[in-house]
Amino acid sequence: MAKTPLFNNWTWKLSMPEPFDKTASNISTAHYSTYCRVATKKATLHAPLLSAVLAYMEMDTSLTPSSASESAIGTQGEKTVAEYQSRTKEIHVVVFNRKNGKFNVGRYEDPAASPKVYSLKDGGNTGTALFFALIPEAMKDDEFRESYELLGKCRDDGYADMDEAEKAAFILCDNLYRRIESADTLPAAGIRLSLPTTGNMPQLTAVNMSRNAYSPSSVLYGTFRILTGAAAHSAAGPVDRDGFVKGYPLSDRTLTPKEELMVPRIEDWYVIPPEVTTICRHAQMTTAGSQPMRNFMMRGPAGTGKTEGAKAVAAGLGLPYLYYTCSANTEIYDFLGQMLPETDEKPQDGRDYPTLTDIQMDPPSAYKKLTGTYDETVTDAEVYDKLLEVMAQDAKALMADNASGQRFRYVETPLITAIRNGYVIEIQEPTVIANPGVLVGLNALLDRCASVTLTTGEVVHRHPDTVVIVTTNNSYAGCRDMNQSVISRMNLIMDIEEPDVDTLTERVMKVTGCADRSAVSDMAASVQEISERCRETMISDGSCGVRELISWVQSYMVCGNVLEAARYTVLSSVSGDPENRADILSSYLEQKFAA
Image (cartoon, rainbow, N blue to C red):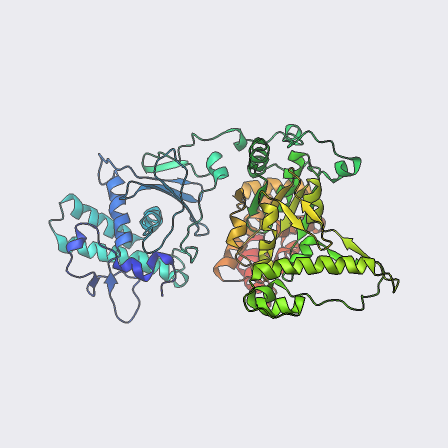
């Protein structure tokens, strides 16, 4: 099985582009790349890869000075950006991050339209656009470049010598195939890619499009039609702090003095990101509509500022902020609140309620636990409704039963407080919940009906100002996929990307007060390099991000030695395995910071 979806089995069965559709055999034992190091030497033509090479040639003005291609390719910092004109006349926009091997892709039927999902699967998109964006990286290899030039010469000659053309095609396909699939064993020539196994490629984010994050700073070939930078607006520049705070009110309500104290204060060091203003603008400008936007998701690696962003949203809206942190054992009752005794005594006859897992796996048995009746026809939805009903009845009985002198009280969760009063509520890391169906129990609060029944029997209706912000990442140990029904109820999903070294340096200097820009910049670059090293070598039992960098800089300010400070901050956090830490220390830190 292929290591990357670009070479899944179905991709080898696709029809070859002209003139290679008339090649006698798609397999050659005579022509293969120098990276073919298996016992049986052979190369296989790969239609999406070969189509990308031919499309690149049509655009390459060094081969075709009067190129009429509608494709384009360029660079933006450490990214390669491309617009590939597909056979169906769609424009496939690809952003390839050469540093981490990740792609962002969008399909455009028209340059003015919104992008659609690029799905890499049989019957969907073939991956040609992704190969197209990889060619500048592939050209760094002498063998690939020489074979590319040979094929270009054959094309210019009208493919008069098909033997030479086929030789070049076999080597090109085998070269890039080996360098991608065997990247770990080819440290210099290998091209490491990070693609989702589902084949659904991450889309271009609206915020990054608006601030020209994908627009090419250098155009190699062609004319861009979408990544032109014309969509830039004021959000790309610094946000005025005074104008932002309480600058996006959702109503004319007056907060109580206690609520005013719950509105977050934006610290002087905090730079308001465009994702935050985007959420605030959408929440405010859709208020008058029949379906105002009130549910948002912010996802990204740890330390990229998701929680600070949620607080900033609350400050911009002028609303109190609360949060709820999920754990692996979180159940629906933890979101809705619990009945607790007013003393340390435990109730004498506490009921053992079924969990959501019990309900989903065996509804009849869960129903019997609640009612004493085993009903094979009962559905999990009916059991869930019965659970809420029984919990409400038990709560009333507990409060009414004073014979033993035991009194109980309902303890409201931050979520219910926010829903009831119209606050901003951040739900942190729901993907760590062992049962991904737990959040489904909150769907009623995320829909327009917006009500939920508490354990006391009270029906709480969602205040129209309530804003729910889910903050999460899906790339760390213990994280699980979020239920699709919850994702579909998010009005905006904002992908928070890791900042570049300059931005990270500025942010950390403001947080820590460190004035040594050179040292902080070197430390920021090292953190990103170490993080990339951990990704490549599958070191996943620690963390190396913004928080670790801040601690590193603070320790450096105390002890005055970068390497010594690293030993007890970034290095100790990166892994619990002594061998992993020793490798990072010798490979990066000692070489860069040794006196």
